[in-house]
Image (cartoon, rainbow, N blue to C red):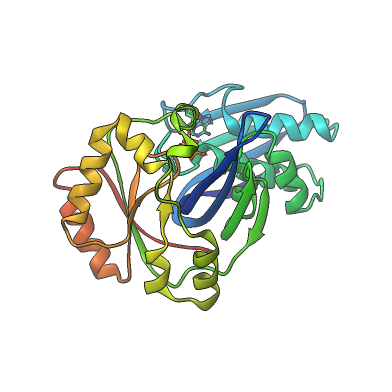
Length: 285
Ligand code: ATP
């Protein structure tokens, strides 16, 4: 049997860390939404319990370190599945970019193997399992737009943002999420996103208000280590874009614009000095 799943990237409309917990993790509040930039995960069932993986990108591990492999193995072990799977990842989402590419691959593998192995688990059950793989996996299991709390595992669905486009610019470097969190000093945070306010504007569907509440407490941390990320954002702001923010732990900087024509114009301007630029629709549902 064969199953194919889309694994869309996400952006953070907000990312806030409330405090550091006793278990070493940060207590988070994030509003995330999916965008129309996705990997494709193809899955073939195997009669033996073997799990194998191939990826179109040399930038991700092709063995048990791959998050998609770990997702299949976890599901297989937890539910005593006797079948295996061959996983093929068609990688489109930039790696280590703050767009949850690996988490989304893991989530898509959970959804796909659930079908392939006829497990009939709910998305909630898959999300609970996904939390054991990574903080962004539960959100990616559901997709859409959501408020994520805790380590990212407490998900509340939200209405999709008003229709708009997102232009992404990824500087030529990767950023380690763990490293950025280690450098974060919670008492030094000056500007916190107003999570409750953005949730309200999403409910009202007000685009102009929504873009005023975008915020990410990790942005100054990543920018202090990598000045090129700050420079990139400053250059984008000079084009007069008001809704520009770093996603996750970076280094990708995104900008929201209302129309396809604005997206194309910004895309063409950014291509002059940044090699990896994408203009896609914000999906949000
Ligand atoms: P997040 O925003 O969730 O921190 P990210 O977008 O910054 O994620 P990923 O693209 O998920 O980062 O990659 C993070 C690390 O995970 C990379 O070092 C990569 O080698 C590893 N990895 C393992 N499996 C995958 C996968 N399927 N796709 C991408 N990266 C993977």
